[in-house]
Length: 348
Image (cartoon, rainbow, N blue to C red; front, side, top):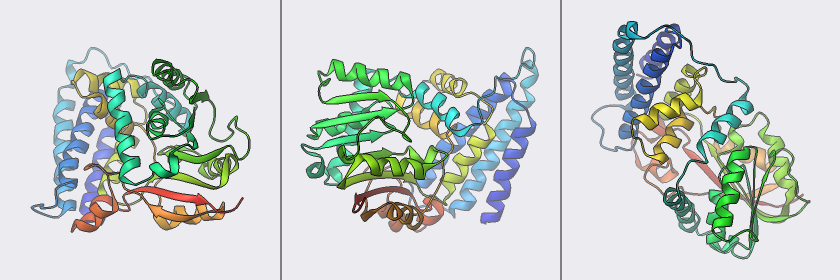
C-alpha cells in the first residue's frame, strides 16, 4: 500500500514538473495542491476511516492528478506563456522572503486571537509558573506573537529577534499600541548571532524556526550562550515520517519556482481566512528538516540541555503524541508528530 501511494505521489510530482510554470499552470498547481492537502486533513483527523490511510491518500493523489490534467487541458486559453518569476533556492533567503511576507498581515482582532492560542498552549502545559516574572527571548519571533503571549502570562520582559525587518516593525507597532514598549523589545537579527549578553534570559523559545535553518546546531549554541544555566528552552520542530509530511514536502518541491506572493494572492482571491492563508502559504513554500525525538534530544544533550519533557499543542489540529497513540493509524498519518519539547540548560 505504501509503495503504491508513493508511486502515485512521484507521478504527480513528475507530471506537474513537466508542465512548466506559466501563470495559468502555476495557478493550477497551487489550487490543486492546496485542495489535496486540505482534503487530507479531513482524513488525518478522522479516527474512524473506511480504509487504510495509504489507500485513501492514494485516492486523493489520483484525484489531484485528474484535476490538474483537466486544468492543463484548458491552458490554451492563457494569453501567452510567460513563466512566473522564480524564487530563491537558497534555504534561508527563501524563508526570509516568505515569512517577511506572511507574518505582518493580521488585523488587530486576528492577531489577538493568535496571541490567545499561544497563551492557551502555555497554560495547557502548565508553564506559567516558569514564565512569571522571568526574562524571555523568542528566537525567530516573526510578528512577535509568542512574546505577547509570554507577557500576557506574566513574563517580566520579552525580547524577540527575527531576520525579517517587516515582521519586526509589525511587532514594534503592536508593542507601542499595547503600551508594552518597556517590557517588549524587538530587533532585526540572525538567530546565529544575537545582540544579547551571555546569560541574559531565564526562558528561551524557538517555535518552529530552527527546522528551516541551514545550521540549526549553530542556533542552539547561540541559545545556550544567552540562556542562564538552569534556564528553560521551549523547542518546537517537525517530526519525521507520516503521510502529511510527504504531501507537504512534495508540494513544496513542485512549487519551488513559484513565488510565495503569487501563492498567497491565489489563496486571498479564494476568500481563505488569514490563519489558513498563513498555514497554506507556509505549507506550500517552506522547507522543513524533519527529525525524531531521539535524534533532536540527543543533539540538545550535546549542548548541555536535559530534563526533557514532551509538550502538547493542545488543539485538535496539532499532531500531539496522545493523538498519535490513540489513533489506530497514528504512525502512518503523523509519523513522529509535532515535537514540542521543554528542556533545561543543565550545564554551560
